[in-house]
Length: 97
Image (tube, rainbow, N blue to C red):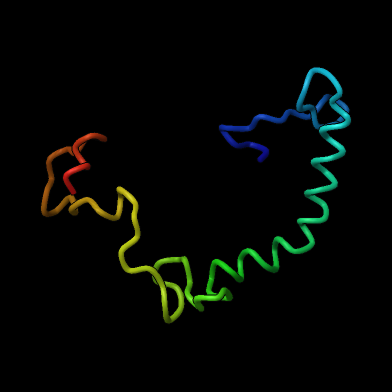
């Protein structure tokens, strides 16, 4: 994504995506074709699915809708609050929680 710290595809000065040093056009045309066709369903399907239009009828966004995850697996959500444990917890220190 443009502006991302992990951007790996750079456009040429003329605007062509540059992914490889050889046979670049075969990669670019394939990627653009896939993305073009996928973009037609991406905005409609993916956001709706994440927010609850899926077989489980469950939102994957915590706090959104009537049914959503209440115990997400993420270090930030599983550590004690800073109010109850104000001392620093390093990356390896969170394993016990």
